Image 1 (cartoon, rainbow, N blue to C red):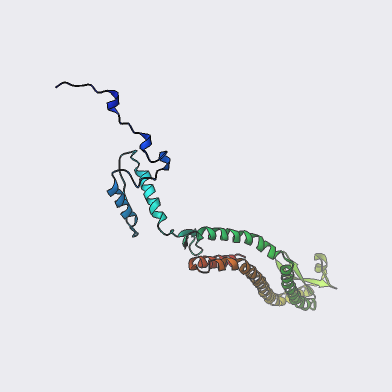
Image 2 (tube, one colour):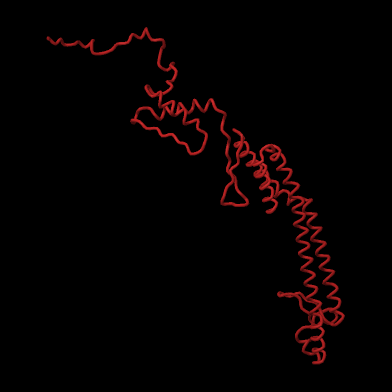
Length: 277
């Protein structure tokens, strides 16, 4: 049998562009998947719809076969037909700082919550210093401090009067109060004290010892007065701070009142701020 050589025209397939129903391939719809892989793509669709935990999809094939792009397009089409997933926000856990809390939000609300918290913190940083620098706060705090000083002066005045009646002066020194000999309202110098008779010096020493118990009781009372004044200032801080803080947090709380987890975090923030006013 004779072998006939083939010409070049017989060795290639030619397509008549006039028979194609499109101008360019850019106008064609994307393929549903790689050619000849219908079963594989059905498996991907089935696996991707498994909502229980513990299921995975493993895709393999020759490099450059387009498997990554095909799977990505398939999953994007599936996602477009499904309800949007929730947002998750990780926030500080005030009860256990090493374990952040995960808050669940409807789609899109997580970003809103994040911005709302940033706005709140910014407002808080401006509001608290202004509050404690206000004229109202200054006047009310000064009233507490004035009351404390007046009470202290009165308490010390009573002890000072008892000491002066016995020839002693109540003197405040670096390490506390002490009783020193005095005459005509002036503390005696060391030289004048030595000029006193031994009997007078011993009498003054005995009187000073007798007043020590009064001094200790007075110091204990002043300690209680100071503690009470400090607590009054703290109560004032809490009163004004809480009012200002609730005003700042009101819109934040109302905005997320339908989300218990978010409300819980807002309340935790409130409690933490109150503890660190």
